[in-house]
Length: 290
Image 1 (cartoon, helix red, strand yellow):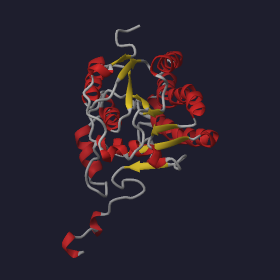
Image 2 (spheres, rainbow, N blue to C red):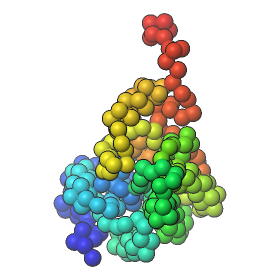
Image 3 (cartoon, rainbow, N blue to C red):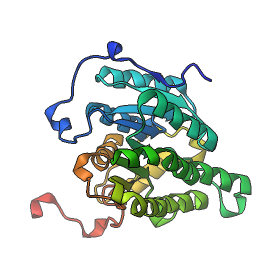
């Protein structure tokens, strides 16, 4: 067991900032959320957005404990309790053990955000069985078994929210990402399958689909020509800019809230219009022409 196991910041260590009127409208203050990959990028933004709404996030991370500790400190600075666990998402028994520990020590999980994913860059001919299975273990199998682990408690309470992070590539396709694309679109299928099975118990399951977001990539070898690629992709986005992690987090906050109580089995795209639209610069005109 790592020194970081289930580490939380106690109430006595928190600042008493409260939840402002705007964030209280979400109606989820006092809930607890498990966020995979919550120590960086979109996951970090989601954890902080939850904290502002009074939700206590549990950060599940694989590597970079220092980053996880930093997010926990940021959350505590907003007056909310934070906890963190280290795990390889491919280790299902480890995931089950973490959920049991959260149930026993922290009162259970009300909101699950399956955010973490891996995206190796490989031609079709280069993908091995091991690489294919590794992508599916992290991107699809882990989300299912985490859902399986948290659902009994959600059903018992008569309230729960599951948000699965998809990807635009799952709808458009992407060269050198056959495994990643397949797993991400499979996640949308998983969302629908779970949603229809648990809707009558007050539990919603939705897919949140980010577009091209301005983040720091932990594995640059998976993203050759990243800077050039971002510039090229931006020119194809109708809003002509990259998204910010917080913009994805705000959409996640909505899906996890009481405001989305009648929203389930849906796919919410946060991509500046990049799907289903395609920017058509030759047909564009100036603002003054409106």
